[in-house]
Image (cartoon, rainbow, N blue to C red; front, side, top):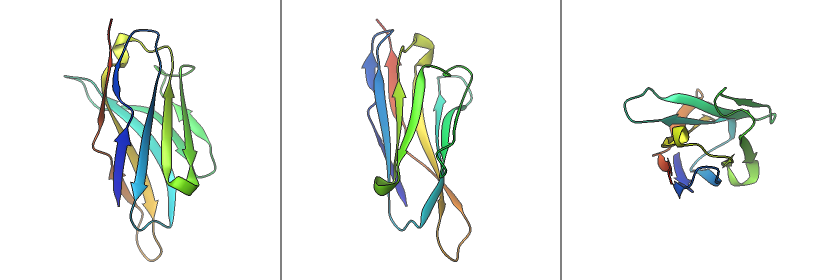
Length: 119
């Protein structure tokens, strides 16, 4: 299973970006899709998650500004980021919990995409 992220870039404060993360390979189900981020010199931080039942959860720092969604037909998760702040600058990673028949659930990470918020 491979995860490929896209949508990062440079944006001014108050702007918006939409990240995508698509999985490919042998997949029966993706029970959990998540976004994390890591800023320079800081630990990786939970951003948002969405379950297979479409329940969503958000980190305190992004609540009300970011929206996570998923498209099961495309094995893809999205992160709509609005009202971006300089402190949102980080490398953003997706992580999927993949279920296949006859095997244990396995977590996979994307390669990361840079988001820079600066004027």
